Length: 417
Ligand SMILES: [Zn+2]
Image (cartoon, protein in one colour):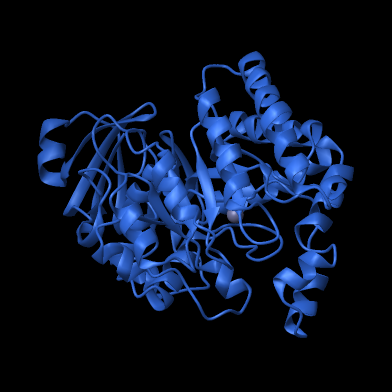
């Protein structure tokens, strides 16, 4: 299939974009893409490709913009219920940490998720995966973390793998029993940390070997934060995970700076995420590493807070910056990367081009899949979106409306509008 008459073909070629390099879209005006099966075969000006491949079946893009499908590298997709009541409480003046201390927050979702039957939980998660796809996300990382005990955590991992098998949204799983201190261990966080290190991580490793069909190991993540896991506990969990062979991620500096960002750089984590209360030293450590800094602007927005990730400083220091939704029921129920881009342009002061690169090739790097997705280049997986507009800057400029006309996932065309 040769897709032609693309007004702006945003290839995002050339790999992840560090520091001030961010925003190289690799635009081909009047471009075309040839794909066969699930793979991109050729990319270039349409005149060239039509001459070279005269017998290919064609699709007219009608002068619209095409870019790589969005890669959302931080989501908590699998949960049951909602926290609308808590949202109202927060608006009435209670803080997130106060709600957490009162037994609300994550723990209320843990209770709902533990009680939810597999089929029901699958259906609730699947609905969100469908919404993501509709808004142009073709690959999403998704975390467990609303079980906080082995069986429930592994059930959530199973749901993520089953959803990925079903498609079309591709799911990259993360094992996150260290999302919060389990309710049974509220007075003994060290005990829960030991349980994770000594029982849950080795059991997840065994489970994976038994159940898997050739996928790489999932990520292991930890919520390094006041009221969750201390720096020492986080180090313990991530070191154990690394020794078992799991690639790493971390939630760091969302509310307090405990040193999680530097720990991520030190341990070679794929990404450090949130990074709101991040210091200049932390930023320098990240910039000197291959750990991707993932900004989640929907979270402070969802909490009606005023502090956001210092994206400019990260770029000035030469860091790798990516964007994600953080889709979760407590602070940011948002499946839509277009909204993240619009928000990033305003609160992180990114240009549309920078935000697009941070939501495609750099977010693919944040889940260590930039060799296969995140750009439109020969040999890569055919994951692309066609917009309803003819200038890419409408992404960022406009918000609240879906600008995706068609999603192409592994070469399969899915009309949206
Ligand atoms: Zn998160």
